[in-house]
Image (tube, rainbow, N blue to C red; front, side):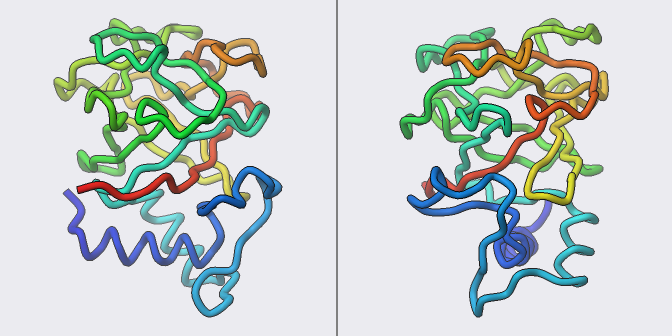
Length: 204
């Protein structure tokens, strides 16, 4: 696991580079805009090198909303269920613990992604390789269908790809509706496959 000091250092770097949106103003900000960090920095070659090398390495106790570019809704465990195999959807952002997510590094640039309310893992159901396979929360067991990597798009957004299939986290049919299913899809560059991270708070 990446050390806490390294995570904090990298988090500070990406905040300075404007890759994460924090605070109440997030909803009003243009999704592609940058934000000045401490000292008014807007990034630079050192920050770019760090983020490209490491991906979004975030403290395990820090939680984030994960928002698709096309709708700016939140990645959401339906009905705040704590059950294994519950469908993950996009939902209206309301600050619930079922919409706050943390990262746990598992090595080689991959992470488990866990919602705060259940501590389960973001999971491609049945470890399917198929386009359109459901994304659920599942009991964490270390499978590659629960390991995700972040592909930096350079504009404050990421593709989030499943290790077992290398497909993209995707809002089905590019729907903007509350409750639309999240699936894995063939990566094609659509904004329903581009995700940004919005700081949602820190818990012990």
